[in-house]
Image (cartoon, rainbow, N blue to C red; front, side):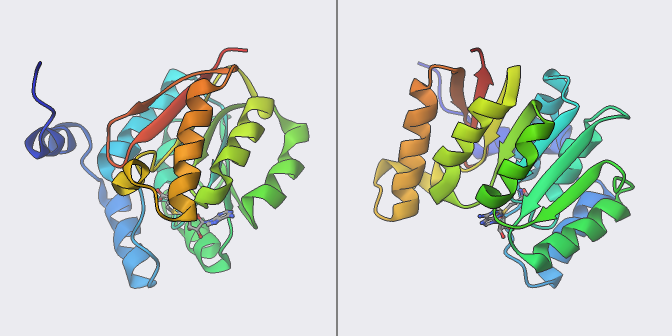
Length: 213
Ligand SMILES: C[S@@+](CC[C@H](N)C(=O)[O-])C[C@H]1O[C@@H](n2cnc3c(N)ncnc32)[C@H](O)[C@@H]1O
């Protein structure tokens, strides 16, 4: 059996394939400067997400959990000219900062920030579907509900992608409601009759499901 990838491998991939440009560095700095939680995707995760958008040839993407726009910028950069991202963000501060960062990145025309709770905004988006990819990175208690929405509103061959599948390791010894929610989400995705799925061992675990039915 070969050895698990090491921190050295992680750092190598990040240095060679996922270096942040000036815009992404600024977004990360501004996230801290605004006193917002520094819980954006790490560069390796963001690069993987960007490639998944490209692999799906995605043109219509939904994100739940914008924070300051870091992951949204990576998604939007992988979209074709006519591609669109709608990102849903509960906090008005986060939504405003994300909007400013999409403008800074020259992506304001491609990205719409909808301020509100995911479970309230998503039903208003269903009529404009189907969508090509959904990225879930918000309240853990609704991950399973967001998966239900993805099953109904993604096209065949579309992908659901979710961050924090390992939830910092808490899925192995779940204590809190959020821990239990992530255990339930992973199990639900793994057993879902409409998705072929796995967890990619990058960062905190990127769950990936491709809609097959
Ligand atoms: C982990 S951060 C998102 C990070 C972002 N995807 C990135 O990588 O740059 C989670 C975000 O979800 C937002 N959030 C929490 N509950 C939410 C909900 N019910 N609906 C929408 N957004 C929510 C939080 O305000 C926070 O900005």
